[in-house]
Image (cartoon, rainbow, N blue to C red; front, side, top):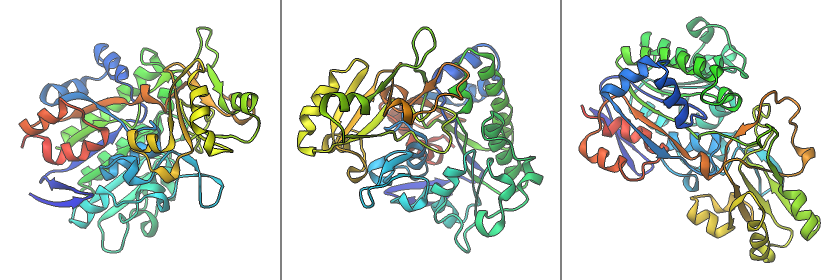
Length: 413
């Protein structure tokens, strides 16, 4: 069994294929309900011979932040990813953090590829392919990276593979459950064809934003995932399954969104000039209208940080407010890529700028979203029992970005 080191950790490489699956937005209840209703028989079999627990994700509980942590094995303070979106202190511009230029450390995927494994990263969202593929497609490296969103565009020079649609079928719409199922189907096809033996498969949370765990739309989706997870098991994959974040309903009893428009609130109390950044913002705002449970605040006068933080703590629905250095320390964030304040809200409440910044016109169901403390607990599942050392660690405070460590080093041989 060979191995490699990456970002201060050693990873053993088992003889058979390895597949880590990030089920975007997978609150634990989705699995509980689907399993209880018999909709995930293959998962039930995986759990009979494996291990299930929970892990704590990184804050903010957003897609880019946690996927970057998972593929590097380190928290946001090391990866440099503070959100999907931030105010760049070097330019003063509000920008997406979708480019690998923002990533400050190498990935486990590149490490495995350099160690001789045939690595495949398949993401639902194209933004993650761009962000997480540095080093994976270098000359002489056995790696590939493509998304279900842009599957038809994959070619060898830029993705390490061509003709993906012949492998996995027609490119699905990104706003669909099929975008996630396609990721798993592609992973299965790559293992079957002998083209990959070390995989990262990252799904999208379109269904979780749309449906609560008990709704049929969610149950049908998890039933479809179950089929492909079973196929990976049948192919002998050593599986690790986790999520980037959970999901909660953010609405009143009548289904209307429960939102604190923090920039407007600050303007009413302290005057104009304090800017709120919503790091959930990404190219896929139909999901959530760029509303989540975590924002940063860039103050006109940073000397008033403590005063304004104290006032925000008094707002109904706000649960935590941290000044910059405290947030960087306690939440493991890159200090140069957050605002003067970090604000998080209750499980049923969202934070925004002002109504004009958030288009909710395309929502056809009560809004569900994420980003704060209440969406950090996620599934942590392995296809085999854990050895003594890792079982002890799992009983403490495992992190979702430990998943590759557990798959490579923690499953009993």
